[in-house]
Length: 327
Image (cartoon, rainbow, N blue to C red; front, side):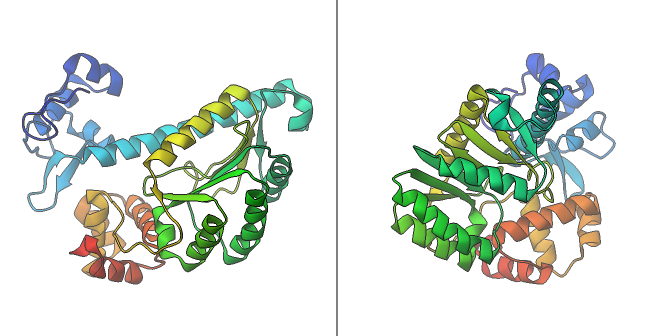
């Protein structure tokens, strides 16, 4: 998709390549071009349904007509979907490796290029501990969700030990961590010892990277309730994931444990949901008003809990009322 003059009026959608890349029909492509020229569509506009499904068109509550979606939010949805596909393919790679290798072979015994599925937290933690014991240059981690207080306390002692061994130690946290006391205390302790900690508001996967050659990666983006993980020792795959981590790291903000008063960045849809919650509306009412499923709104609210460090619709609405987002 090629844009000239920025989104909105004057934007141009390249017909030649966009239809092929996005799988759009000619009607959907024409509707998309019109949206980015500043037009609004009625619900029965030919091709509009495809744009809604892709997150490229949203309904304007005041006019009940459809306009161009926030492209940043649409891109983030697309990235999340592609990452889920990557996790799926990693799982397939693991199954292929298991079919070739002896049943139950360990990563160490299977030789280079192995991808193994770790079904339980205990299995993952045992392998991670083994890898950390042998770390020689760096340990980089990513924690997209909050960690229990007990786990954080155990983590401080382990992490300080790794730092004192002279390893390069980095941790990437979600922006919501700045609002949680336990994570602030952890970040203060490890950064004083020489670690680097940053926060990122965009979605990312849980992972541990050891010496850029062993990678443990979770399945949180594909399944938020999953506790499973993969361990990757294939040199090319491990290096690729480490490079992806570095890109996320470059986009993140340094953090030494201080509390952030600034409201996190969020999509227009998330702001609409927050305004509705602050106004006392239920999930069902919000879903009907925004033309979304209750499941979609519920998932968005769960993401907002994580982003803002709240745990109920009441506290989320209260947070919005006093934050910069509600001004």
